[in-house]
Image (cartoon, rainbow, N blue to C red; front, side, top):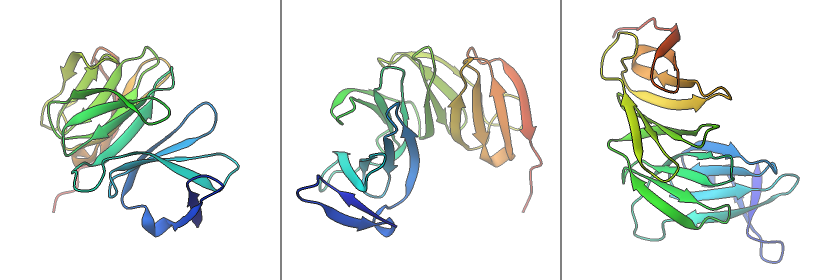
Length: 193
């Protein structure tokens, strides 16, 4: 499939092969699709009912970054997880960075909650932040018991504020309250080598 980047007066056609490692994506209320392009260290915005896309954020030549995941809050701000630099960048819908804050470890997933808080799936724990980057809570540790993790890969928050994490190493999904109380799990049949 082909997409066109830029505006209608100077389009540049790209193919799927030119998206390198697009791990995270999210849609806004208008139906625009934002893609975290890990390999190109950029955020791409695809418009509904159009063949046009725009790169709204790019690290630029020679700058190391790795946009791993992306989420959007209730006010339309984007939060981009920069895995390599261990930080979150908060962007307005045009792609301008309005805030940047560090996360404590290598992280793979990010999700905005209905109350405005931001959740991060780090390797072996969940981190909860305000939308201005203040760390509110962490929970979890390495292991196989309920509430323990082995290589968290993604995170989601439902409309009631419950938190779901993809616990890759333990082959399961775990569900928590927004305060970190373990609620339930699915899967968990760990396959050994």
